[in-house]
Image (cartoon, rainbow, N blue to C red; front, top):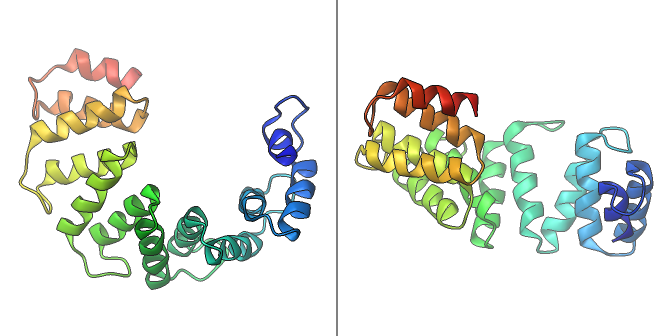
Length: 205
C-alpha cells in the first residue's frame, strides 16, 4: 500500500523507484497485488529499466495465482508481441480464462480476437456477444466495438440507430473515441439527421 502512495504521489512526492522497491519487497513476500503493480512498472519503464520479459514473468505469477487481471494483461502482451514472440493462440487462451473469471476487459479483448480471427476462428456473432457483455458491465471500449459492428452489420443486423445509442453512451461516459465516432455519424448522417455543426462540436470535444 505504501508503494501505491509513492506510485501515484498521494501524501508523498511521486517516486517510481521507491514504489518499485516496495512492490518487489511485498511481491517477494507473496503479495500478488504487489507483483501485479511491479509488472506495470516494468512494462512502462517507470522507476525501473523497461523490461517486457520481467512484466510477463510477474503477470504469469499473478495469473497462475488466480488474478484474472494478470491473465488479461498477459494475454494482451502475447497479442501485441511486446518483448515476447507474438502468439495469438496463447493470447486467446489467456483472455478466455480472464473473461470466464469475470474480467470484463478480458471479454472485450477476446471479442477483438474473434472479430479479426486472431488465434480463433473469425466469428462476428461471438465478438458481438463479448462486446455486449463488456459494454453492459461498463466497459466503454466494448460499447464502441459493438457500435461499429452494428454500423457494418457484422454478426448483427445493421442498425445505425443502435450504433448511435452506443456511441452516445460511450461519449457521455467520457470516452473521447466514442465522441469522435459519434461525430462521424452526424457528419455522415447515419442513424441521425446530418448535422455538420454537431459533428464539429464533437470533434472539437
